[in-house]
Length: 130
Image 1 (cartoon, rainbow, N blue to C red):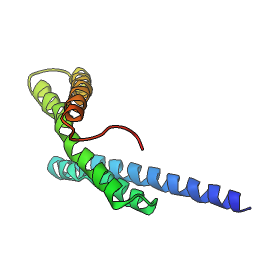
Image 2: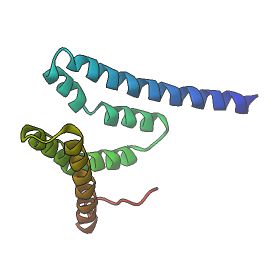
Image 3: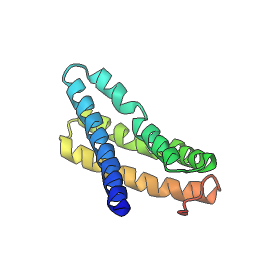
């Protein structure tokens, strides 16, 4: 009976996380119908990272583990910017949406792979799993 209860609580927690993620996406897309700037603001808020940090804390991660996570997020913002830079540039220069998005995504994956290698070699971050 306790195992069933634990499974139910875990399932409810996962469903709450999924529901919240969907709600954030809906908030951003619906806001974009009224204000692209406000939608951009909502999308730029690191709500996913903040929620992940809250859930990590709730799951018992140490302050040091959360700090390492925060460092990783901060560093990995850099290669993620390439997607938005390329998407904006290509769309403004007559490219269709999906090819622009595809190129932005591929370039971002490449940028991540290169950047992760660089920061590993510089000793800025350890990518091993715990």
